[in-house]
Length: 121
Image 1 (cartoon, rainbow, N blue to C red):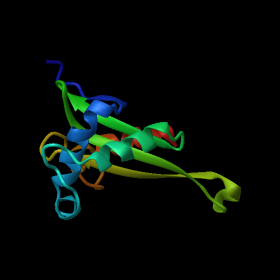
Image 2: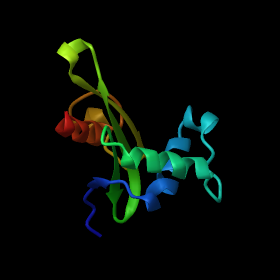
Image 3: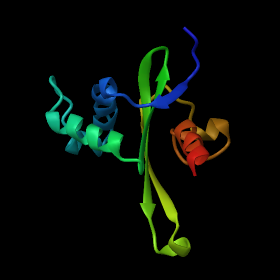
């Protein structure tokens, strides 16, 4: 076991793990359906995201287990002189990541995914 977090592009096989993470928080538990089998709608959405060059879906993996996800969406904008803007959504498994105040900022428990997302900006 390396105990090092690896960031990689999400694969179709990761969908169930991603939905587990999304459903495992206060808001997600109200809107997501983490059940066996995972509803086909999630796989359909993944296929659309995976084909779209304006989306980047990343997973964070620790010792072979998906512990976080980062979805970056690049959006055309009239602001910034017609430039692209990035919107991100992160989700992580409680307890597997250092709290941000332990690594020097106060944005929440997702500092490593947040940091990773700045590499794409």
